[in-house]
Length: 116
Image (cartoon, rainbow, N blue to C red; front, side, top):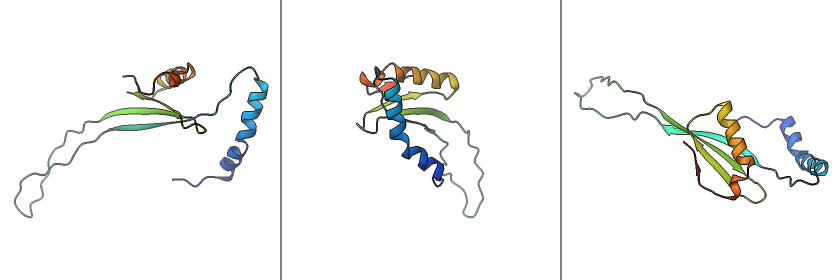
């Protein structure tokens, strides 16, 4: 894991001020701070044992098949509230749809979201 840089630390230190500034600029709106990350989950080929004479080198063909899914997760650090989606791919279009679903307030309705 890369070591955090001073620039990243400075940005985090200014974060409360930036949130307060946005709240001041848009006083009619409710401003909340959320964090987001995505993670790839899936299956990889499994090595199998085969019978062979002792000392023999055995080469077994493996049909590499991968099945990936992606978890997009949002968390509200102050309350611990979470919102997540399991999606089949990562692309600009899918990410835009994810942000649109999050912006609609889907986290308030359902905690188990799955789109495939």
